[in-house]
Amino acid sequence: MADSEPIRNVPQEFEHFVAAPPHRLFAVFDDPEAGDEAIAHLHAEGGFTNEDDTWVFFGEEGSRRLDVSGSAHGIHAEIIRLLQRLMSSDVNYLRSLDQAVRDGHLVVAVVVGHDSLEHVAEVLRGHGGHSLARVAHWDYVPVRT
Image (cartoon, rainbow, N blue to C red):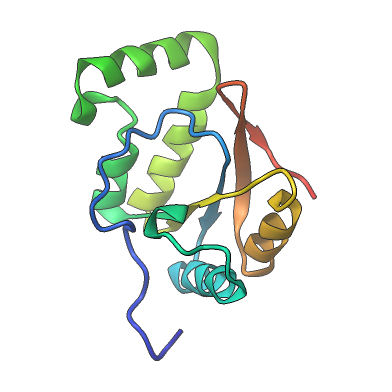
């Protein structure tokens, strides 16, 4: 991807609250350029036609978008985070994602279906992605392929 600008904090207009989004596969890339390459690989294969299909989190802006406390998205989001702390391990995983982006790593969340999960996980891992997890029953569960 040396010929183009790196992909950072996509989509540009991101107002989603990252609670426990179904059909998303999350991964951490220690090397942001490797994350860019993984995203480019997936986009080149097709199937990702909408900017919202791949969320990218990086740096302080990425941390704001992950919003571990829920405070950036209002009282409703803060209540959801409270429930997550009480009923699941979601917030622990989100905290690890937040720490990763604050440490200069890249986090991606890619739309996946049941039939594409393994392939997308292989592509992400093949480019150095780790700590893969998807949402199941309002909880992040590790993905092993």
